[in-house]
Amino acid sequence: MKHTAARTRRAVLRATTHPHTAPYTTSRGPGRGRRGARTWARANGAVLRLTTRVQEGLQEASRRPDRGDISTTTVIIWVAAVTGAVLIAGTIAVVIAKYNGKLNGL
Image (cartoon, rainbow, N blue to C red; front, top):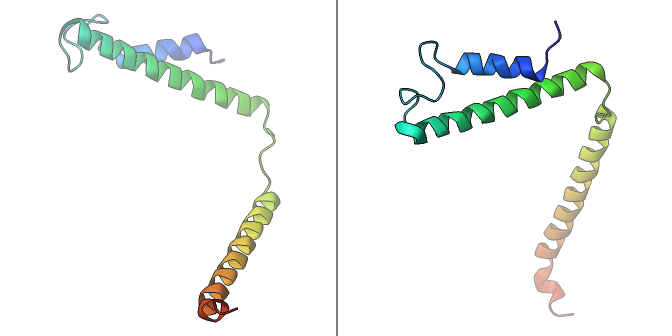
């Protein structure tokens, strides 16, 4: 069965709507009157956008399994480079701190 944005939207609305009340009634949610209904409508819209975006991402991942993700080798090289740079900077800081008094007289 093919998942579409419309089907996802219907499923979200069905899951978030109480079965005994119509949408946007005052009995839904913590607020009273139209303000509570607007808050719930805004929340439903946010959930709808989020679920639609996740669904599109999953469809894209299933359509193109190799999306150019960073390889393990690249990550290892970057971690080694950053670690080396931090070690060099730390060594320089220790040497300067150790000999700071002696370097002032030069």
